[in-house]
Image 1 (tube, rainbow, N blue to C red):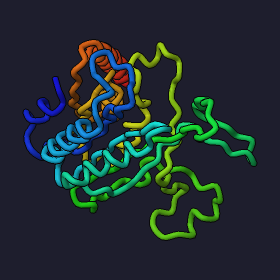
Image 2 (cartoon, one colour):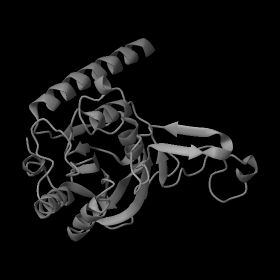
Image 3 (tube, rainbow, N blue to C red):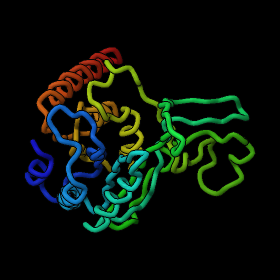
Length: 262
């Protein structure tokens, strides 16, 4: 069903983590949804989504909103973030999802690089993940997605835990599959993205994960892999069918893995 209608059936504060990526209103070829509605109408809808999300999110919950824009209209994510701000959300962290990165000195160019033919714009190699909370004071598990120190002398130099692990920071390099058959939805994020968001909030504080724009179920699969309950909403029957099939397959794999461990 429609996500606003669906969330209206939930008890206030019952969701601890929301990970989602709404339509960007940039003309993506969804099966049933019109991704070209007037900007004011789109932002009004986003405010409604934000309002209902705020109601169902727990006081110590996290909302990870993945959104990007277009080269011609880079204001879209900023405008949507402002719409969420108007409904009471606090922007606690602004995370950059890096799709492609170039490190010339190391001879590295990694990730999905989509060429463009333009003399005005740089290639768009990132999207935002806005980490919203209700009060800006939610403690996160910074090392759940941590990375080893390059300089091992730093392991014992700073305060806190004395182990070879540091905060990843607010730039997350997450590549994704580009083969069309692996992406039956025109604008899905990789499973690793919701995995990292859920772990960032803290698995020990996660009773329920929600994705209001479920698509083909990548957040659901992330929740299954992390062993946390999930609920999602999707208006498109075709995407729901794909999501249900993928979730069923993932549950079978998890069940087989558990049997192998016995």
